[in-house]
Amino acid sequence: MNYQNKKATIFWYDLETFGLDSHYDRIAQFAGRRTDLDLNPIGEPVVYYCHLSDDYLPDPLSCLITGITPQEVNQKGICESDLINRINEEFSVPETTVAGFNNIRFDDEFIRNALYRNFLDPYKREWENNCSRWDIIDLVRAAYDLRPEGIQWPARKAETGNPTFKLTALTEANDIDQTGAHDALVDVNATIAIARLIKEKQPRLYSYYYSLRKKAKVKEIVQTPFGEPVLYTASFFSTNTGCSRLIVPLTPLPDNGNSILCFDLSKDVAPLLQANAENLMEVDGVFTLAVNKCPFVSKGAVLTDKLAVKLGIDKKLALLRYDQICNQTNLLLLGREYKDTFEPVQDVDFLLYDGFFPDSDHKRFELIRKAEPKDKLTMNLAFDDPRSAQLLFRHVCRNWVEILDEATLKKWKSFCANRILNPPGTIKINWEFYRRKIDEKLASTDTSPEEKLVLAKLKSYGTELEKRIFG
Image (tube, rainbow, N blue to C red; front, side, top):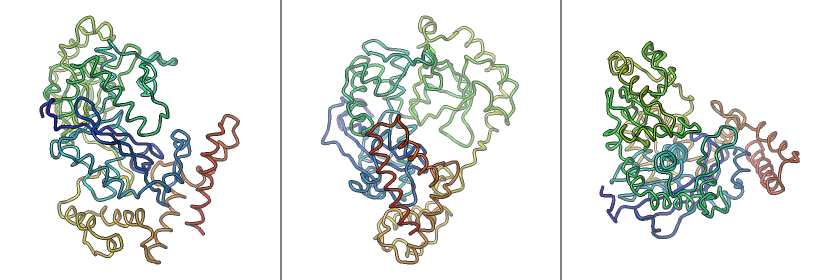
């Protein structure tokens, strides 16, 4: 796509959520605003709230950060199925780049899981009709490391001396209004303002990173096997000198075409050369780079001697280690033998990444989406994927509890009770934690009057929910 194509737009968005686990926690508020590629607004912004279903308890600490309560979303909001339909329509407008601030690692995961729970393709909006996704937080990090001129940078973190890239700190340092932070629309406008600042002060850097939203462009730079050294800017490299390191791309991972096995050339190479397939990922300096997550990668030539000194990179030593690695072709075999041993929580809400649904089920999903809520559970669809039937029950009950017959409602209440008393996996927000945390915060002298209002509403919501489920 031509960067100057005026039909192309960017849809900037932000979420406020009731917790941090994208598989389990729920969206509280969505806000978005469309701009052209020059960051001029197009149309009016949109703001939506999402109802909570009775099988879920919000994290009180998240509510204290956002100030959003269950009562507010249930009064202002729509059901999750309607919410994600509206979001998907905005994101799927042809030639749309969906962008935000740390959205790829956080907000996009909530979007994918909501699409999955509601029988919509979790990934199609990211590529179909020349759509894409982008995230400016690594653009900010790269501007700090590579092109800091013209931008005011917040004070470093007192405890580590590392640079800070919080949106609120960036807007304050650059005199950008973000009054009401942790309101989704306020944060969207702040994100656009930071993007506009970098585009104005460092237009080539901005334009270059915009091109990296495409996997093909990333792969031109991160070549395998044993590609040329790459300067990679990422959060996990953060030190008091910056966020960039010279790395060597080794080989693509066999089970994921979007992940490339890499090694940080600031690390000792000896453990890597002695590794086997079982302990490869435990070696200090080994990591995976996802080409579909807009990594900020630059050709090694960008790292001048002067910049290397500024970033604390021993360039000569890094290149020596690179030469050592390139002579070890057995590393390619190790990378291709590596198997991800991650075991997902065996609950259907956590199984988004447990494989693609078969085409036969996708056809059934279309029928589900078109059916009236009252008919969805009686369609007698013979699913091929075992996740599908479980998702259907939860999909209907969470979104349209008012249409359930007596037997289904009884089954749903039993599910809700078990979910709240014994949430899956490592989720800690159960009934006991919820009530105890609220009472502790209400009793604390460090809790502000505004926070106590939020906590009182959470306590009241818990009482109402208890009556609905256990009464």
